[in-house]
Amino acid sequence: MRNGGQLLVESLVALGATKSFGVPGESYLAVLDALYDTKGHLDFVLCRNEGGAAFMAAAYGKLTGSPGICLVTRGPGATNASIGVHTARQDSAPMLLFVGQVGTDQKGREAFQEMDYRAVFGTMAKWAVEIDRVERIPEILSRAWAIALSGRPGPVVIALPEDMLTSLTDATPLSGPFEMAEPAPATDALTGLRAILEAAEKPLVITGGCNWTPEGRAQLQGFAEVSDIPVVAAFRYQDQFDNHSDCYAGEAGVGMPSHVKDLIARADVVLAVNIRFGEMTTDAYRLFDVPEPRQTVIHVHPDASEIGKIYAPRLGLPAGPNAFAASLTPVRGDWVDWRAEARAAYEASLELPDLPSPVDMGKVTAHLRAVLSEDAIITNGAGNFAVWPNKFMKYGPRSKLLAPQSGAMGYGLPAAIAAKVAHPERVVLCFAGDGDFQMNCQELASAAQAGAQPIVLIVNNGIYGTIRAHQERHFPERVSGTDMVNPDFPALAKAYGFHAERVEQTEDFAAAFERALASKTGAVLDLNVSPEALTPRQSLSEMRAAGLKAAET
View 1 (tube, rainbow, N blue to C red):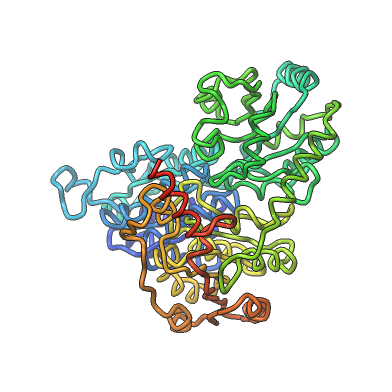
View 2 (view 1 turned 180 degrees about the horizontal axis):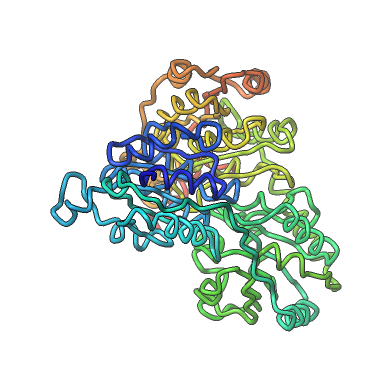
């Protein structure tokens, strides 16, 4: 006989879970007790806020391809964690959120911290379920694991009534993991794809999603290179295609470079692999006509419900990205100039003039491109600062980017901690704005306690940059709610046991970053960045002047 907490934890171990993230709560004490016996097999990473814990689980799922596990208590714990569920959903990242629940004998009374989790998470998660009978834990957990991984991966929320977890049962835990084969493309669909590509004059591949294998990425790259077709990454998925390849042409994301917009607009055939045609990748749905694009679209996705969801493709292929890539054979066409032009425009986009700032982020990212290890993991949250890791870093076949498609501030630091938990031997570098960093800076304590301390670069310009940019464009000289008074970030980081420095000038960065790499306790570098350098190619003053001119006309 075992209680529900033990049955749940033993089944998670059998499925292959090795890490979990959370904040303790009295509603799931039986699970915490069971985790006492799994140290070294299924570890619990103690976090400081459920939002940070859920971000860690979402990032872990995105990085590893195995569901990230998050454990939180009922009510406030669940609502705090909801930001991670939303992020995992938009990222298409597998995640399981376990939430303590009031006892089954108290349900429906609005008991202390009671919530209806099916109603709260029903439209946010792939599935929201409550386990009322202890013997059904293996059945429902097995189904939840499969749902989180299948089709378009995503989050599943599982509510755990307190009395169910303490009930005894002779039910058998799950015996082991199962493999889920990807759906392969039909032969006739591949024939149709080939015919469309062979007739193209300006073909383009857009790729993304988080359920790629290294082999699948390499096979897609080989197809693109032999076929001489340019490749664009969907919003914040540029790590899924080797940026050093002569076929790579940039990222179709927020702040989309003009050359990428032009490339998509001029393409006559677009092979969209494993993407969901989000707002950022389509420039607010302007680059493709809704519902019938001017471009001939071939849409490949493991979840058939994503195909035709927004755009009617000429050809829809329900297939997993890796199975699809393995089925591709090169296509020949007169595209060398088209591909070369796209690549040259991408390379030119990395070149910047001197920026009006004590620390020039253009030069900082150029230095990082030169010195970072090939398997570095880079993370960021949301804000204007994210342009630096998203547009000015190069990602090779072994490097990774963890960045939220949901545009959630505060994601970068928890994601970096999760990455360091998963891969303690790798360099993990977090880009954070000063506002973004303060959303979850308390998780530095979680990092120190777990021995998972990344390097954090704080792009400190004293403003909420994205909102300030919108203000200057639409309400110039009427600044409201975007100036910040910040703490002493190095002192704060040192209090958490990190190596920390203030970097005042560009020429000081290289040495400071070398010391950060050498630190055994992670590092926080506070970069003195002027608000004038709000974007790479337009200063704050220029933005304001343009806003005033537009207002006059």
